[in-house]
Amino acid sequence: MSIELVQALQRQLHAQLIETHISWVLLDGTHAWKIKKPVTLSFLDFSSLTTRHRLCHEELALNRRLAPSLYLDVSPISGTAEAPELGGTGEPIEYALRMKQFDAGALFSERLAHGQLMPDHLVQLAEKLAAFHAQAPQAGQADDWGSPARITRPVETLMQGLQAHGCEAACAALQPWLQQQAQVLHAIWLQRRQDGWVIEGHGDLHLANAVLLPEGATAFDCIEFDPALRWVDGLSDIAFMAMDLMAHGHDDLAWCFLNAYLDVRGDHAGLPVLRYYLVYRALVRALVARLRADQGGADRRPDYLALALRLSAPAPARLLITHGVSGSGKTHVSRLLAREAGAVHLRADVIRKRLFGLSPTVVSHEVVPGGIYTAEANAATYARLLDLSRLTLQWGWPVIVDATFLDAADRHRFAELAHCLSVPFTILHCQAPGAVLRARIAQRQARGGDASEATQEVLSAQQVRAQPLSSQELPHTLTLDASRPWPAGELAAQWRAMAG
Image (cartoon, rainbow, N blue to C red; front, side, top):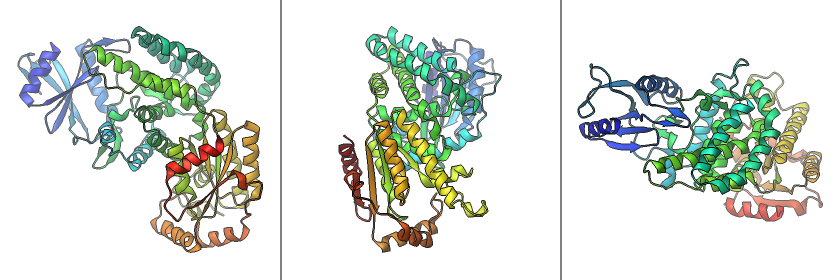
């Protein structure tokens, strides 16, 4: 009955019909009417009208957390399948979730396809999701959300589904890695659950579920039908968007998104679990694409299984540290390099504030007596950067450490870390004329909202005490005049060549 009802509503509303594997959406130019398909799949059961009604209200409430302007109400549909009445007073035969229709081309998937998805959009979304995760309810000790069994069970179900769809070879190649990771990560998953990183998140954060609205970037259409898919580690939530960007050939945007989220959320210590979650999310989309194909949908998917295999066999890790005084372009250069090279970006200004319980843009001297730039704070910051670099490298991710590194002793400690872990070590020396340094600091102070609190006095002090690179360091150094145009791709290639 439902397809006849949907087609009748489409004619009444003069609407465009969009179909997914679990729903129909009618777009009438003002509103979007979402109707759940009466389907039963391995991961959901929409066969009952009572269930569909309940889940419409659940979806309304959950999605108002991130997109309150989009989600309006649940409308009953009465009448008959041939002559349905939206909002009718008779006995409901179906229910529709009424949403505000956003502009065509606003979806992140659409913007990416048209070359209009910009790094700033992903930074904005990452910052919103980081704040959302920080305020979300955390899994309690009485339930098992985020337990190892809850994490691995859906992966096993996905593998069974993919095998049933003819993907035996890829599944056989992935299975040993998944089993090994489940053993290695078991204690880490338990600890992350205990530490509050398992939250009631979104659960379905792919490109077609993120949108650029007039008020900014946000996510919508979260998982409502299974709490287990929504109560997840925050990095599992975030991994979905990063994975989808990678699958569409935009690793640069994926790392822009990941690093922006990590800076705001302060969860760099969670990087050991990220790769598993990226692979898991790739498997989700691989199975969804095949289920949609079963229903007659067009097969225009990226090769998510190929991505899962690539992520399970990462390239060797490598370490790069920056060197230069404030205003020399270290953060701008290293941020763009991290995007281009697919690296974790550890920024000293952000890590320092985290040590004092501050968000990156808080002005520290207004809230911390004595400030956060003492000798003891400097030592603690570099020690934390060293610890995070070690952890990140050990789990197979390239790392860029963005700090002044004016003291030779600090540089030596990171060089020793790279030597001990047998990973390539590179120094990126950023320089610019004095007038440019001073102008940049003045502009940054006037603009505000940056993690750096460097002043002209700080710059002068740095220039006096800076210890130059030694003859032993220069062979491992890339030197960049950051006052002139420079191509990120070329710099990334130089880093790869030096690390190779």
